[in-house]
Length: 160
Image (cartoon, rainbow, N blue to C red; front, side):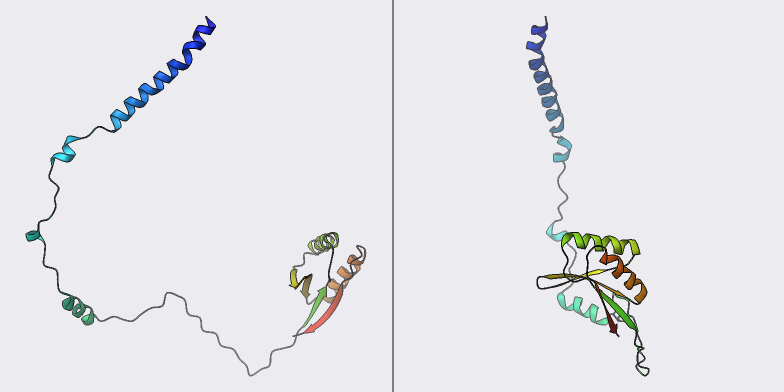
């Protein structure tokens, strides 16, 4: 009994799917005679309106007074007072030099712990991690912490 069911199951499913596929295709591809029965409404040559000549078209635009062209961007007016010289500020740069991957990882973790923003500076083959800060004490604390990881960091004073 089981072998007879297995023998006829696949052909029965195949015939059923084929039947529904043929039924679906016949139903989808039926031609509606009413679509082709009406004549298409194609305008005839005598029904076309008069198209104005090129000269009239240009005259119409030349008579139109335009209020002006507005730029699609916002204009910003900036005034810089150069009478007073800018004040010089002291900025300190922490230069960690060339680091191996483990030292770089330790340095990033220390900076993350102190919540300090940093940037990478690459010159030719040398990659440096550079920090600019106005807080000298904070940078000195970081240098002391980095010595625990055998990282030689230096603080340089920059006046701007």
